[in-house]
Image 1 (tube, rainbow, N blue to C red):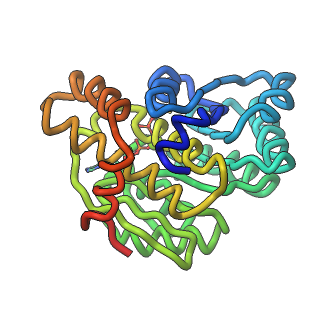
Image 2 (cartoon, protein in one colour):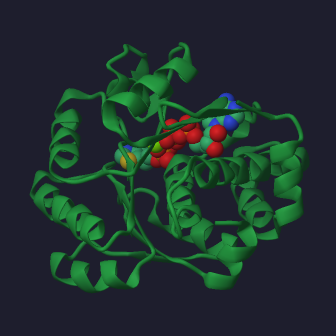
Length: 258
Ligand SMILES: Nc1ncnc2c1ncn2[C@@H]1O[C@H](COP(=O)(O)OP(=O)(O)O)[C@@H](O)[C@H]1O
Ligand SMILES: Cc1ncsc1CCOP(=O)(O)O
Ligand SMILES: [Mg+2]
C-alpha cells in the first residue's frame, strides 16, 4: 500500500503488543495515517480480527499462559486472510525460542521483522546479541535469505543495513542512522508499520516501503536533533510530515539496492 492510500483508507492495525512500548507503537501507526488498536483478551479476538486490516504479534513480554491465545489470534487472522507480522523480540534466548517455535508450527506467519540476531535465529546462524539488541557482525543479506527460505515468510531484517527478502528477491537499504537504535520501541513500531503497509496485500515492495519510511524519517530527524529524547519526538513529527514524493525519491535515489 502506498503512503497516500494509508492516509485515505486508514487501515486498522491490531497489535498484540509487548507491555514496554505500546504507546509509541500506537503513535507511529497513527501519525503515518493508520489506525492502531491494542488488545490481549481472547474473547475479543474474533471481532477485532474481523474488523482489522493487519495483525502484528510482538512476543517481547509473552507469558506462557498467553501463548495459546496468541496462536488462536494468528489462526483467526489466517482464516480471515489478514496479514500476520511477527516481531520475535530476543527470540535467541532459549526459553523465548520455545513459544515462537510453537506459534510458527501452528499458524502461518507472513512476515517476520527482527534485528540481525533475531533473524539469525530463524536462519540457524550464530549472531551475538545482548537481550533485545543485536551486537554482532555478519552477512545480514545472507542471513535474511536463509531465514526466508527456512520459514517461508518475508523477512524484514533491520539495523544499520535493512534487508527485505522472500528468499528469491532481496532488497537492502544501506543508511546509517545511529539515533534510530537509541529509542526502545523503534523496532516494535517498525513491525507495526510493516503490518500497515501490507494491509492490502503482502509483498516485498510494501515491506520495503515500510522499512524505507522509518529509515527516511530517522535520517530527517537526525539532521535536526542530536540527542535521543528530542530524536524520538522529532521522529514522530517526521513520520507525520513525510510525503509520498519524498519517500519515492528516497527509494529511487540510490540508498536501496537489489
Ligand atoms: N545503526 C543503525 N543505523 C541505521 N538505522 C538503524 C541502526 N540501528 C537500527 N536502525 C533502524 O532502527 C529501526 C529499528 O531497528 P532495530 O534497532 O534493528 O530493531 P530492534 O529495536 O527490534 O532491535 C529500523 O528502522 C532500523 O533500520
Ligand atoms: C525492553 C523490552 N523487553 C521486552 S520487549 C522490549 C522492547 C523491545 O523493543 P524494540 O525491540 O523495539 O527495541
Ligand atoms: Mg526488537
